[in-house]
Image 1 (cartoon, rainbow, N blue to C red):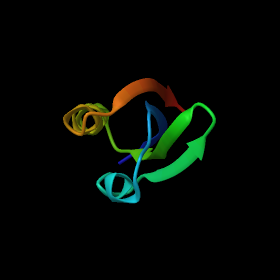
Image 2 (cartoon, rainbow, N blue to C red; image 1 turned 60 degrees about the vertical axis):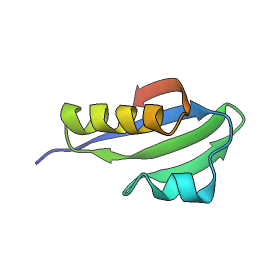
Image 3 (cartoon, one colour; image 1 turned 135 degrees about the horizontal axis):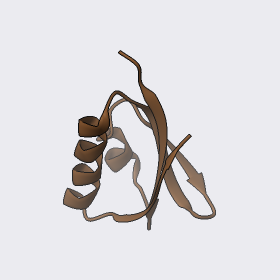
Length: 66
């Protein structure tokens, strides 16, 4: 299965506990906000991550294929 690397920028503060909820992704703090980066297997998985961001009350700033 071919995966694609994505970087998802969220607004606000991302605690270590929240970052741990995104299993398989690495959280990096940048001036633009926290960035979750990692390999996403398919579009369904990407939509699942976006739903998870919404359910945690995080602001979605940017989604980028890296």
